[in-house]
Amino acid sequence: EIVLTQSPGTLSLSPGERVTLSCRASQSVTSTYLAWYQQKPGQAPRLLIYGASSRATGIPDRFSGSGSGTDFTLTISRLEPEDFAVYYCQQYDNSRLTFGGGTKVEIK
Amino acid sequence: EVQVVESGGGLVQPGGSLRLSCAASGFTFSNYAMSWVRQAPGKGLEWVSSISAGGSGTYYADSVKGRFTISRDSSKNTLYLQMNSLSPEDTALYYCARRDASGWYSLDYWGQGTLVTVSS
Image 1 (cartoon, helix red, strand yellow):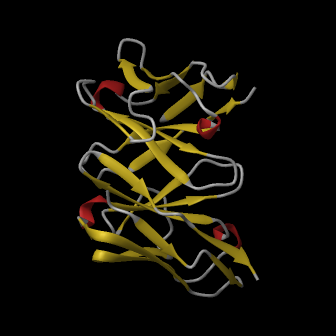
Image 2: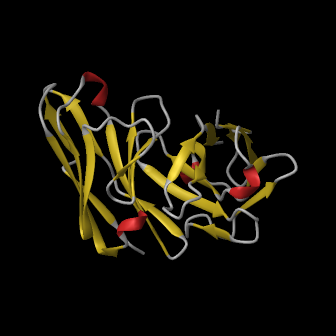
């Protein structure tokens, strides 16, 4: 089973800052099968990025994804107040989905 | 508008059973694989189970294999999760999610979840 490790666990940042979130896999992940989600308190997760770098419908272009193999990154170019949330990466392999433990982006 | 709405959660004693439902609308249900994902209180997301678009393929996390059964009824546009031999570790908010149909294996629409509490 592929394990996804997200770091850091929590980031304290101010609006307007640039943020880079890391997702590292225990073995190589097919880029096609790497996704990122945003979850705000009391809400369901929302798909942000699929295929490692493609934005989902309606997602602002300040969100971008990159990476390959075992290292993937979600970047928010300029934090907006509504971006403070928890972010999860997810991969698919061998008929199973796995999620990373999440990174919380909080207001500094 | 794509919608998935979960129901059937509640309080159940350890060892008990519960069946969750997920009503889908706004898309051709029979064309999409579906998944269940759970989130224990204050914790992260955990994939539970998936079913193929036609229903012939079912997949489970090791933590629920042999206890949970996923199924679907395309005539009712409804996804199910039969949960047996429940333990306190199964306490979580259970989300139903649609898997994209383009081969990306991401979950593009999620419901708001139904809460399952296993406690005596």
